[in-house]
Image 1 (spheres, rainbow, N blue to C red):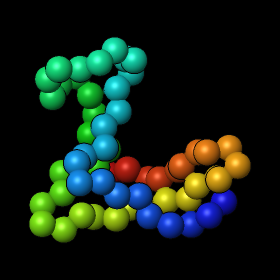
Image 2: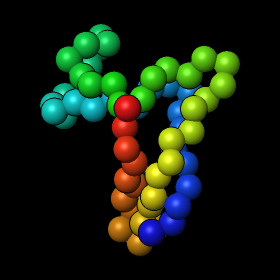
Image 3: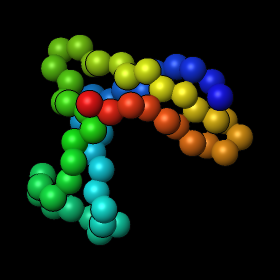
Image 4: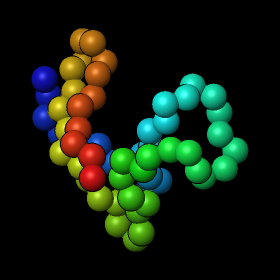
Length: 57
Protein backbone atom coordinates (compact mmCIF):
# COMPACT_ATOMS: atom_id res chain seq x y z
CA UNK A 1 0.00 0.00 0.00
CA UNK A 2 1.26 3.43 -0.90
CA UNK A 3 0.60 6.35 1.48
CA UNK A 4 -0.51 9.71 0.13
CA UNK A 5 -3.51 12.06 0.05
CA UNK A 6 -6.83 12.21 -1.77
CA UNK A 7 -8.40 15.55 -2.69
CA UNK A 8 -10.97 17.11 -4.95
CA UNK A 9 -12.21 20.59 -5.79
CA UNK A 10 -15.70 19.22 -5.13
CA UNK A 11 -16.98 17.10 -2.28
CA UNK A 12 -16.69 13.32 -2.40
CA UNK A 13 -20.07 11.65 -1.85
CA UNK A 14 -21.49 8.17 -1.32
CA UNK A 15 -24.77 6.74 -2.62
CA UNK A 16 -26.29 3.29 -2.11
CA UNK A 17 -27.85 3.51 -5.58
CA UNK A 18 -26.00 3.11 -8.91
CA UNK A 19 -28.52 5.45 -10.60
CA UNK A 20 -27.41 8.89 -11.78
CA UNK A 21 -28.58 11.85 -9.74
CA UNK A 22 -29.79 15.20 -11.00
CA UNK A 23 -30.04 16.97 -7.66
CA UNK A 24 -27.86 17.22 -4.58
CA UNK A 25 -29.87 14.94 -2.24
CA UNK A 26 -30.14 11.31 -1.17
CA UNK A 27 -26.41 10.85 -0.61
CA UNK A 28 -23.84 11.17 2.17
CA UNK A 29 -21.06 13.72 1.77
CA UNK A 30 -17.74 12.08 2.73
CA UNK A 31 -15.77 15.31 2.38
CA UNK A 32 -16.70 18.97 2.35
CA UNK A 33 -16.62 21.32 -0.64
CA UNK A 34 -13.30 23.07 -1.20
CA UNK A 35 -13.19 26.83 -0.64
CA UNK A 36 -10.01 28.65 -1.71
CA UNK A 37 -7.82 25.75 -0.57
CA UNK A 38 -8.47 22.06 -1.12
CA UNK A 39 -8.27 19.91 1.99
CA UNK A 40 -6.12 16.84 1.45
CA UNK A 41 -7.26 13.69 3.25
CA UNK A 42 -4.63 11.07 4.20
CA UNK A 43 -5.17 7.88 2.19
CA UNK A 44 -3.52 4.65 1.11
CA UNK A 45 -3.82 2.99 -2.28
CA UNK A 46 -2.93 -0.30 -3.86
CA UNK A 47 -1.64 0.27 -7.38
CA UNK A 48 -2.09 -3.43 -8.21
CA UNK A 49 -5.77 -3.83 -7.21
CA UNK A 50 -6.60 -0.13 -7.82
CA UNK A 51 -8.26 0.47 -4.43
CA UNK A 52 -8.01 3.68 -2.38
CA UNK A 53 -8.79 3.74 1.34
CA UNK A 54 -9.37 6.88 3.40
CA UNK A 55 -11.18 7.90 6.59
CA UNK A 56 -14.02 10.27 5.85
CA UNK A 57 -15.37 13.09 8.03
